[in-house]
Structure formats: structure tokens, C-alpha cells
Length: 591
Image (cartoon, rainbow, N blue to C red; front, side):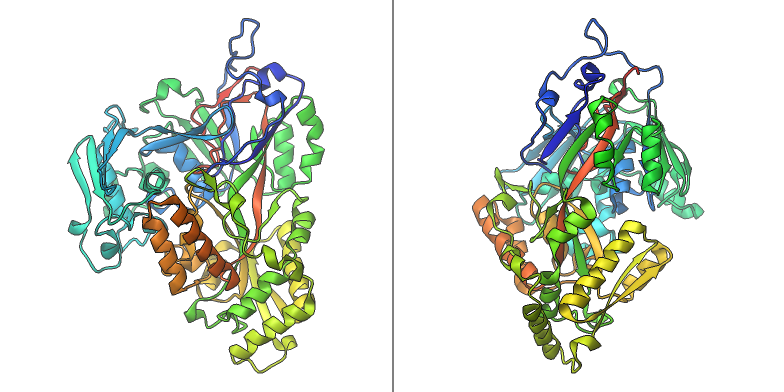
């Protein structure tokens, strides 16, 4: 569970205290809250203790526009948010009064596991229905899971299903679909069999990429030339809401899905989502009650909005998310060490990692509100009942004092240059960092990278700016970078949700710099199948040490999210894993 601190002002306190605890973007640890916010949770508003709801049950949110609405192809946080609202899989995650994630049955009513831990049988909810009135059946889940691992589609999250018997061979083009152990039993029952026990399997299959699909509609869209990936009019929905309207790069409207099996407990009738890029505009809309929830990108408002929290206008929730931001370094063999030609050398990469003053970074750009990271796995990720990060030292923490030791850093980088066959001086090296359409904060961070590496390593840094994401992706795929900023929110509560990103040929490896190490791969594989928590802890510790000390990734900070919502919003959840916001139980109080 994530650490969480909630602040509520005095005005409308009787209403605000009743708001259900918020959940967040993707697992769980201990919570801290203000004394006021831990009081009564239940009813509010009227003198008789009952809730008084607003006439219009409409929620207004900021939208980061989606590049796709295909559940199997989901990749980004904004897609998780919308797809969790309009679609539904086996489970749905909320939070309890302490902000701890609570996963409930949704598309299924139960599941069984065989004694050997290999076969899972899922029993579906009979009343589940698509928005066109067609019942949700086991075949829709089987179709989805098989589509997820279709080698021709190459979905990024396919690796989560490769533990199923026959799935990896099929995905790699070495086996057939018929050999994959995903089996339809009857309309309300399907099963799958794993190659080895997987302690995190149930956590994985609750994710959006495992949601059911309508193959008949997908095939019809393909036959007619329709854009299934991103055309909402081609889709049907089995979640609490459905997409009623969309203007690309501008807005999206969700409306209540009356065919949803639990529609009687969904109060919102509409969710308006609008694209608002500038943080100052976001703040103005929030202050004018034209936005109801906002995760700050400009942390200066933490101080500016404290009076609004104190007087009860806003509720403020500060959460430590299962999220890490880091520098990706080009280690793809095809990239030949990036534009510098040096990124295949682990000493050069390690020198770059140690040169970053993480404390200064956090203070300069995030008001010290994030947690500096000397490791990959953030706090709150558990193995059994043990918080992994709180019990195992961060691998790079022992080098924290080296960030300003110029002589040490330059000697380490020079050793790497020599090993890579680079005959020039440090001043002859140029490292390239790139981004697209940067805002003021991003520009400042890029300039800071430049100063850090030029002053400490004695190299030059070239900053490349691309006009849009498509040209940036093209440059990335052509290995036209030495490093760039990236982040990852954990998908499920296990260290593997971070560790597997750097396993050779993982579906996301191409976005993570292409780190490849046989010993690391073997340790992760062993940890994935082990059923012994202590053994898994030791294996993860060894693997993380290898990744960090070889400069496979350069961690910067663990995210602390500053979320604000209007005090008339209640029932809002921010699960630690999954969608940033779970909206199905939100209510708008009279105000």
C-alpha cells in the first residue's frame, strides 16, 4: 500500500470527512493521515446524517489524450484511467478507509487453483453484459488472452501471459495457438495452466490487458478498414461507463452504462474530460470548479493552495506512489552505443549514474517532495508481508557521496572509454539527450543534466528537441540518443513489475534502453517461479544489484503525488495499482 497523507480544511468539514479514501495509479504500504481525516466515514451532509447529493452527478477531469483504446494494447497511465472506467475484467480495485488497496470480484465471482499451483479456473458473473446487450462470456476472455500473445500483433504487455503453457513458444513463432493452455469450458467458465507456479499471477490477470474483448467486432472493423485501435464508435463497453463522445486532442465524454451489472451502485451520470496542457490553466480551472480533481505537475501550488485546503474548498492527498523515474541509457547492440558510441560500456554508464546529484534534483524541481532513488524498486512493494525497499538497502546508496567527486567520476568514465576503444579525451565526448515539445520544467531539467555531466564528467551534452511524439519515437527507434528521461508505475504489487522490464527481449525492453545480462535474466526467471518468499527476496536483491551497478538504468526519484479534489467530491479512489483514479463509486455532494 502507498504511504498517504490527507489534509482537509475546516469549512464543510462535516461533508469532507465523509469522502471515501482515495486510491492511486498502480500497490500498497503503510499510511499516514492527519488526525481529522481519520474520523467518521459513512454518511454526511444533512442534519439527519444522510448524504445530500447534487442534482447533476457530473465529474470534470483533466484528460491526457489517448493514443489507443484497445485494452490488449494498453501502455500508458491515461489509457489505464479511461479503459478501467469503460471496461471491466475479472477484478476491480478500490481502497478501504485507510487508503489500502482492496481488490473485489468484478467480471468473475470466484476462481479455483489446482493443488500444484498451475491451473486456474475462473467462474464468471452471469449478469455481466456489454453495452449492446450481448452477455460477457468466457470466450471473450479466451479471445482476449490469445490476442494478447498473438505474435503478429506484438502487444507490449504480452510478456505478462508468457508463463501460461505454450504462450511463450506461440509468441516467439515457435509453437501454435492450439498448444496454448487457455481453455474455454462453458459460457461462464474458462481456465489456464502455467508452466510453473507464479506468486503474482492473479495480480497480473486483473490488469487491463487481460480484459475481455469482442472478437466479432474486431474482425468486422478489420474487414471494413475501421480503426479499432482508436475509434470509440467501433467499441462496446462492459464497464460502469461508456465513451459517448470524443474530439481528438481536445475532449472526451463518458456516460453511465445502464447495461453494467452493478449500474444501480453507480451514481455519476457523466464524466467530462478535457485536454489542458498548461499547469497554470489547470490551476485556474480547478479554482473555478471547472475541474474537480487534479494531480499537480507544478508543485508551487502546494503552498499556494494551502489556504484553500485550510478553509475546506479543496481536499489534498499526498501519496507515495509505486513509481520510479529514471534515465534510460541506449544499450541496444544495434544502436552501437548511442551517438557517443560509449553507452555499451558499463563503467561509462555507472559514472553517469553516480554523477547525478539526486538530492539537488529533487529540491530544485520538486520542492523536495519526491524521494531520491538509489535503486529501481520503490517503497511499498511487498514480497509476502515484507516491504522490499524498507528492508533492503538501495544498491547505489553506498556511492551517494561520489556525486561531487569529479576526479573519481572522470577516472571511471575514462576507464570505460578505453575499454570501448575511444581514443579521444573526455572533452571529445558528446552525450545526446532528447525530448519532444518540452514545457518550461522539462527544459530546465534538460539544462540541469547538461550542467551535471559537463561539469562533473568533462564531456559535452547535446540537447535534441523534437516537435512531436511521433518524430521523437522515430528517433528513439533509430537509437539517436545516449539517454532520456523515462518513468514506470508498477502494474502489480511485486518487485517483478519493475525487474522484468530489464529482462532480455521483454516486451518493454526496447523502451528501457535494451539492458541485457544473462545472470540478471536467470535470477529474475528463478524469482518468478519460486514460491518461497525469502528466496524471492534474495534473488531480487542480487538482480537489482547487478542492474544498478552495471548502469543498466539510472534511477532519479520515487514519485510523491500531490492530488487535489473539490470537497464536494466523495467516493473517489486512487488505487496504488491499476488506474490512477477509480471512478465507479464517486458521488457529487450538494454544494
